[in-house]
Length: 120
Image (cartoon, rainbow, N blue to C red; front, side):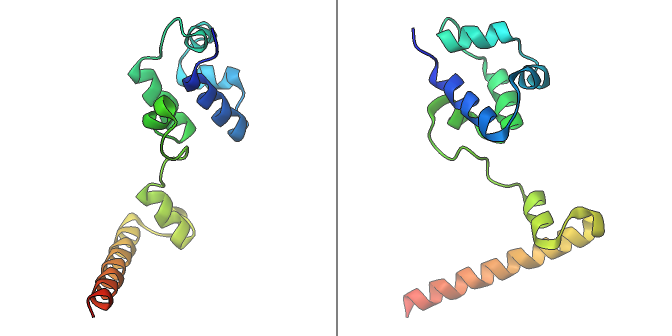
């Protein structure tokens, strides 16, 4: 029996991120024996394990299960905010929220302008 596509995707992400399997097993609370059973197709990972693994690898359960979609999970709002303003350490949560609201308003304004241009 061949290797599992799910395990192949996990292995690829582990290699891409330079994560050792021993660390992966420990950090995700799974055993190497379970992983081996998944790989041979004798068992399949439970959804709760896939959710933990997806979060750990920064991807989605959909990607792990199907290979469809992006291998990397879209950035969260906090990560985007930190990228925009150089990190959370220099700004209070209130400052970050205020700046983010301004960015959202500006994005809505630009989108509205684009829609108006298309209508003309």
